[in-house]
Every structure is written in structure tokens, then in C-alpha cells.
Image (cartoon, rainbow, N blue to C red; front, side):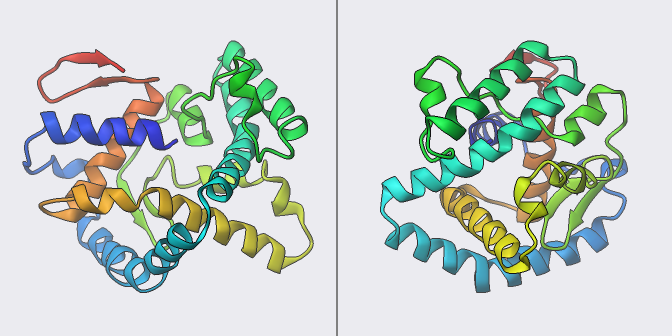
Length: 233
């Protein structure tokens, strides 16, 4: 999932000028900014980022890679189901094949054997993208406490997709919370470099990159920029 995000960020910074966006995409901006300040000015710098920095510095690279592979393998479950729901049968087959190979030969997903076998990872699919494919509008932009940027359409997707997470059925709350915490810290560590490229109004930066990234994912890599040029990535 990081590759399309980084691609969109590069496109966004190189082709879009900093201008005020139409207000209809963010009618709750005042409230969203307050939540943003909690997420990104309080929670992240005080707790999440320091832990992610420590994790990045102290954890050997092969361990970090294994952890990243493990969670990417779990993502193949919602990837395959949502690909199927969107009518992407070839992609669904590819994602399911990756899940089966990496879960077995890849030692529970720690090793990405499927890529070596010719089954490349797709950009990822979630229920929010499925709803978009079914014609559901994105609705207003939302900044959710703890979860970060979203939209009215995308907000329920984490809840729906959570039913496809095998760890959500573990009876131990400590195990469920621990697995989720590791996932969040590993993802935040992968995004440490993003902090250096954020500029201007950081709230707008996060909002606009998120919305363009969602457009990128929903359109399978085809993004129409502000100059009405359609480019395939």
C-alpha cells in the first residue's frame, strides 16, 4: 500500500499548486482540524512516532521486513475478497494465490515467496474501494480520532474489513491489541521519511494527499490532475 501512496505524493507535489480546495469536500473542516491536531500534534509526536523511531533504529532490517511481509500477507485476505466483489477475478485469483503460497511456503507470511513465483503484489483493495466501484459517492472528508484521514464512504471500511482479520477472533484482548499495535508501529516506521516532505498547511497536505491516493487506488492508478491530464502509473 505504500507504493501508490508515495507515487501520489510525488504527483501531488510536482503538479498541484497550493490553493484552497472547494469547500464541499470538507464541510467539517473546523472539526476535522481539531481532530487533526490531536492525531498529528499530540498523539503522534508524543507516543506513536517515538516508538516507531525506536523500532526502526533497534530492530534489524530483516526482522522489519519479515513483520512487514506478515501484515501484507494478512492484507491479501481483504484484497482477494474485495477484488472478487469488484469483479476483478484475475486479481482476486492472484491475491488468493499469494495468500496461500506465503502462508505456507513463506512461513506464515514472513517471507514473500509469491513474488519470486511470479505473483506480484497488487496495490491493495478494501471495502471503501468496493463501495466506490458500486457507485457509492465518497461523501465529505473526515479526520477520525486515532484512525486518521477518511471519508464518509471509507470510514466504515476498516470495520467491515476487520471481520476478515483472523486475529479479530482471538479471545485474548492482549493478543489482539498487541498485534494491532505492532502493525501500527511498523507502518509508522515505514512512513518516517514522509515527515520531511510535508510542507505548507500540513492539514491540507494530509487531506489532499489522502484524497488523491484514494482516487489512485479506486481508478487502479489512473489519476486526473488539476490540468485535466490523465496519466497512468
